[in-house]
Image 1 (tube, rainbow, N blue to C red):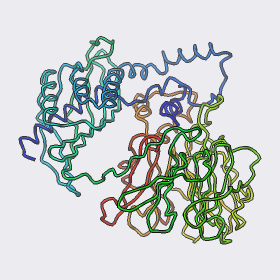
Image 2 (cartoon, one colour):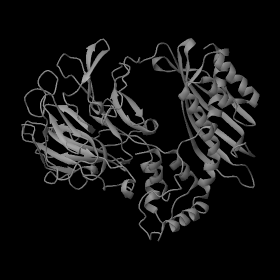
Image 3 (cartoon, rainbow, N blue to C red):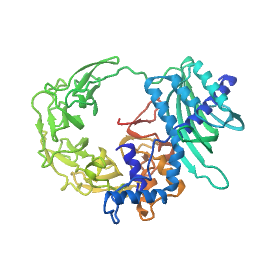
Image 4 (cartoon, rainbow, N blue to C red):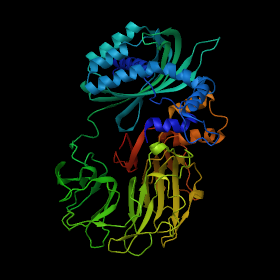
Length: 584
């Protein structure tokens, strides 16, 4: 799901102290200005229809446009005005992105220095707080001092001379208050900046909120100019020393016929030598692990196939060798039998024979759900929004996509459709991105967790014989989010399995909520907007059912997150989380 798709859904209609002080103040300003100049790329939450309107439909496209224009001028006027002020951030953000793509650090500085404003307030640094892993945190507060534009430009030049580099950034126009007779328009801009200081082996993260008071002036593009920017609320996090992770492999694959991508990526020790191979299913390539961070790539198959978005490696035919089960671009599911050397030879077994081709395979999960000693399969599918004129309806509980399938194994690798008799038909049309067979109720058999876009999570308990029942009533927490992926671990160290689900938060939705804007004829959309746009959710096991922890806000917002995994990054005995943004 694209960024703009999701916004439409939510809218309704639419160390040395001296040096430390200098660097801290400079970065505070950089954050402040940058925040100002950049944006939450969320655009028109209010301006486009979120889902099929349940009321009377316009008689024509022209009537629809007229109705949209009327709502923009009335119901959504506050948000449309917020977007006009956001244009200042958009212009800066676009300039920073363009400079980043070119690797032009000077252009980044000039973009920041070229932003028009009247005054930038920065705070006095508080004492440094030492955290674990060598991380230090520093906040700022009163008394403040004010920088003029030329002071800001000089600070940026000094930072550039010292070698500081802006690696990446994230900006959000979090809140907006329109101008009134008593005062100017105001905004709250939240930001995250990642800065590198190579000379001192330091990585610096700056986050917090900028308070912006707007002037009545406009720049040459017609965008509003800030009058005062208050960067006092920023924090700086630093860590010195070697980087924690080092890139050891970069693999680029040219577009060849239908093999136009690398994903999905599978990890498995194909040849049993104790080293994990990397299978790039989209490119039909295997990266054979040679040890010590070295890999050798070779074709995955003798006769390459074009694959879809779902694949899994497991012993499906029970001969002790790993097999490859993959959805193919032609719309079927094929089993490639392993030959015992880690390779897949011979013609694949197409199983089962679906009545309709697979149109959006997104995830394959395997496990013995009926306790007969072989591995069964759950095949999930995703359906993008807007295709053929359709829209997930309702956007918070859509069950109108391509069907998912429970496939039972006869022991030889031949799979048979069993979705309806297994009790999984009712919600099989979710727009699903991820699924897992896992023992959710601690009774020794495999249950099913399904993570879906435009809905959230669904829990299904297994009776041990392959019959499932809806278990969403075991949740003492909100199940709703734009679900992308999940990760399992004992996060609270109580000896029970917990799970984390990646979702997508929306600053624009929060801004609409703060403005009190919404459609009076769609109370359900108003009620569900922030529940869906909350972001990531964590679920902890408890005797009374799954619950969200007190620290849920701390893990909720990690950007436009798709993939996630849990592992002990710092080797301290507890699981950590990694969240990947973009199509990853």
